[in-house]
Length: 169
Ligand SMILES: Cc1cc2nc3c(=O)[nH]c(=O)nc-3n(C[C@H](O)[C@H](O)[C@H](O)COP(=O)(O)O)c2cc1C
Image (cartoon, rainbow, N blue to C red; front, side, top):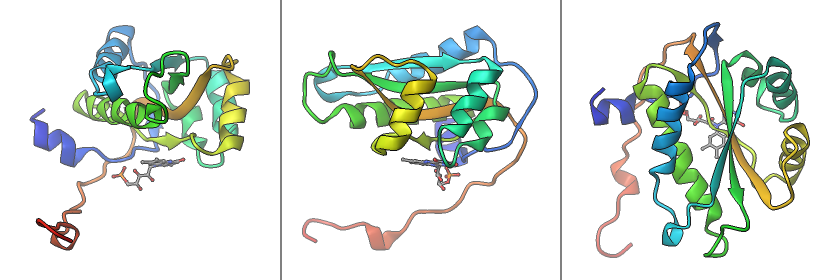
């Protein structure tokens, strides 16, 4: 898929049809995630891949807007390792960059996903932490359900010249 087609065509997919996503595809997706920029190249991320139906169901209940996770082939939980952080407070930015790379890779592969925000909501973080037994130094950032799309969404035009400023505000 051509780059701009990928960027503009990516939309949040919240309906999935049955079908597996193989390990090689997941690796391709995670390679894209790990290619992201990070503060001082700290790469603080970990990616927890969840395939078990009961865990996907538990994740979908651990968050108020995550029902679609139960229908996905798998979910990737983007996490940050506090022991790898070198530049204080930048880890959410690093995880966001990795997350967007993953969403674009998923779309380019003909699959679907949606960014389910976890950080910085303490209650969501605590619930996700419980479901997948995260150690204390690992912070959950978001959940990315991945699967075969069961909905088609057209690109939306969001470019707004009113949001572009030149030289001085
Ligand atoms: C930080 C963040 C948190 C989000 N959290 C959720 C969520 O909890 N559940 C959900 O269904 N979508 C969530 N979304 C997806 C947005 O609703 C979606 O990106 C937005 O409506 C634009 O639509 P699009 O992704 O189709 O372009 C989140 C997106 C971001 C960037």
